Each structure stands twice: as structure tokens, then as C-alpha cells.
Image (cartoon, rainbow, N blue to C red; front, side, top):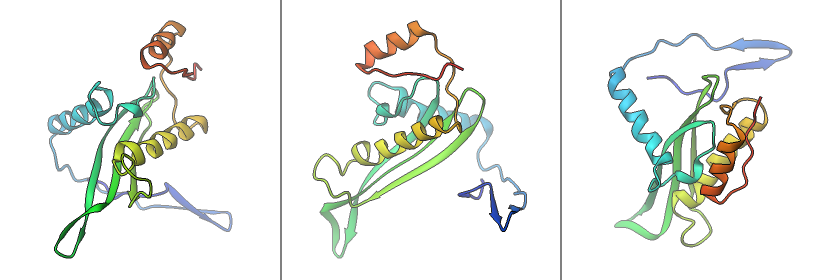
Length: 162
């Protein structure tokens, strides 16, 4: 268990302020935690996974989509939803990030109130920006692997090969 933080440190007037070291509490066994990670990765990598559009070659990504009716007096609304995707990404160098996206009451109609249509694209765009800005480094893939992925997915992706 870790207390989440938005930043690794704060800076003010050219001074850097670091957070006090955290004490970690193990709430799951390592085997249980690994099993949960494997399940969340399958949500992204499985052909039937709700987050398969999050796949980025060379990165390990896992997470869970969520779509919920908003509670109103007397029950749940049939027309108001919240959508979310909470996931993690790990790159070839071992850097890991956990990212949560909440879309409150998506304004577009069906199917955009589903998390896979609203929260998931924001999550993927965030990861793409992290790659672009050097926070994540995808694993090297040879040109044949890239061509095979493009053919399978019907996309034209490029992977950083440094």
C-alpha cells in the first residue's frame, strides 16, 4: 500500500522539496499481487478485453475499465454515467506509472458513456505523451514485428527503436 502522489517533489524559489520517505505496507502476498497484475494485463492484451485499444507495442499495460450509473434519489439514473479507466504501464527500462482517468458524465451519447469509448482514449493519449516526452521507453521491436502488428491491427504504428 502506497500513498499516491501527483509529483515526485516540489520546487519553489529554486529550492527542491522532497517528500519524506514512505513506509510500505504489504497488503497482498507477492504471488497474489502478480496474479492480479496478470489479470489486469489480460484486460489489455486479450482479443476480448475491454481495454485492448490501449495496447502500445513495446510496453506492458494493464488496467480495468469501469462504467457506472450515477445514483439519484430513489435509484440509479438511466441517462447519467461516470466512466473510468485505472491502469499501469511498465516500459523496457523498468519505469512504472499508475494512471487513473475519470470522465464524469460524458456529454456524448451512446456508446461514449462506456469507459472504453471515453476514459480509455485519454489513458492511451497520456501514455503516448509520456513516450514522446521520454518518460517511457518501449522495448525495441524489429521492423518485421512492427509490420506484423500493423497488419494484424490495421494500423500504422511506429515504435521508438533506440
